[in-house]
Each structure stands twice: as structure tokens, then as C-alpha cells.
Length: 85
Image 1 (tube, rainbow, N blue to C red):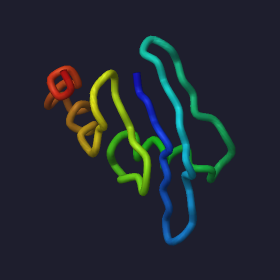
Image 2: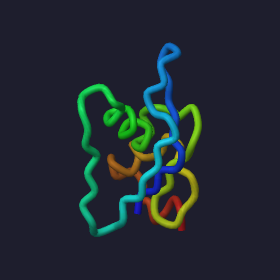
Image 3: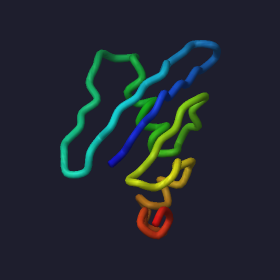
């Protein structure tokens, strides 16, 4: 499961994400939909560790908070199980 709690992110004083939360359970399809410019890509970049949030947290599975490690999982350098079990 991916859990996002109260994510906030601003660029140049413009609030892009403001307290966004979601849960994406394993084995289910979760979509992020909305018009252009509302922060979908920014949220995914924070979830993937490309950007740091100004506030909030991202969790994978039952493990702890993930901060800029996801790119290593995607590239196969370590597994989520190794990092958070």
C-alpha cells in the first residue's frame, strides 16, 4: 500500500499541494484525475522522491516514511522488503 498524509508543496510562493492525503491499497488500481495544473505530477514526484514535500509524509506498506529512496527500488538496487522489514 502507498499512503500519503497531508502533503504540501509550494513553488515560488504558489501552493501546489495543500494537505493532500490518499491511500492506494495493494492489488487495486488507484487513479489521480483532474484538470491541468492542479498538482497531479507534483504529487507523483513527491511520492517517488524526486521532490521533497514542504510538509506531510509518504509511506509504503507497513514500513516507515520514505524520503528519496524510491528511485533505488525502481532501479532494482534494493527492495522495499529489504529496506522496511
